[in-house]
Image 1 (tube, rainbow, N blue to C red):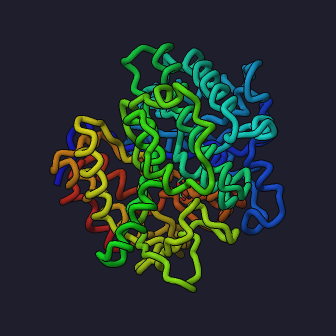
Image 2: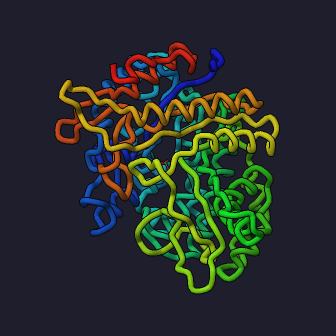
Image 3: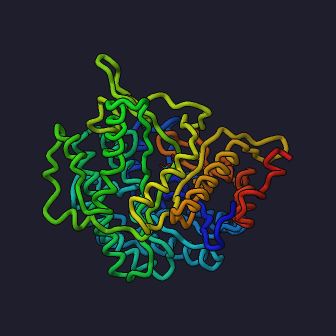
Length: 472
Ligand code: BGC
């Protein structure tokens, strides 16, 4: 099974997870700096203060990406590094950092794929209400416009938001992510203001850069199976689909607020914060719909007296699934990754095909896929990570099959280039194809990196790297 010559093999990271240099170059705190300083929020009290120190070590990381022969690097901009007050006066030092990174990537033949928002809202904006207020969406559009003006000549793909599901529901409902709030109404306000932010920013990018430069929105579309084919279980799975997926897809792709979502959440809100004309503003169909995919869930309808569940997303005791108390998430079935997530590669194929059928002609990219495993450095100094290689092989096969079935998938970004700060898990979970020693910050490509480089070179899943994968 072969990938086309123009299929993009890339890799991804995010600013707070890799940059470090939290108080250098004029950067001000983001909500994640605050979250990390709140006792009990992050395992082991870890912070992104240093992370992988990519702020200083990016030339080395660029050499690694180049050495692996990858065509694109998806990274995110730290909003508070370029706009320390969230809006208003830009910080030339922050902008210069990203210009230099983009320029060097281009020179090395690697496409910069830039995400404007991978969860690190400037704390000053959270202090004014964060995503619960519409001003934040307008501030985001101004920030997008500034970046288009400053970096427009260097960036190949502009992604507005990464996984607004996480920003809204994990940030404002379960509180497992920053800003750590546990208010269902705030989460739904955040859903809407993030959709609005995407729409306003996409419009600003298109106004500044014309229609040639692709705009992307990245969603973590949830694949949820009903436990049985009873009407109740099917309704439970549909509820998750609506709250998790339709909440974003319908406003952005169709310009509509899902009537099912309004119905499901009616005890929380009447959605009165959606102003006239907002849905038209949200309705900016991305040139590329980014799909982040890791695993699936199985749910059933909750029986009387049965305990509710959090859906495997955090340990604050509050579920991110607003208005879904009557849905029970079943424990995932193995083999599990180190995150405790199941592995169901074929669901990725089905998801890509399904989205393509729903939105004919829509270009898709898998903007994240990968797995955490507890890899160790072997006595030969190498990191042999056969589980990750197997995971990648299976999921890339699913992508190739989806393409064969007509889905217009044009790229795949492995999460992640490096082991990095895994949010509430701190540094305990390693997603990298390159190991980071957090004492020395030394980088060691794992077997999976070599396997992926082989694939990027040959584009052929049938012949790639069987020998050393087997541990040779
Ligand atoms: C996020 C990444 C995260 C990864 C693994 C995605 O939800 O975009 O930032 O590290 O999943 O949890």
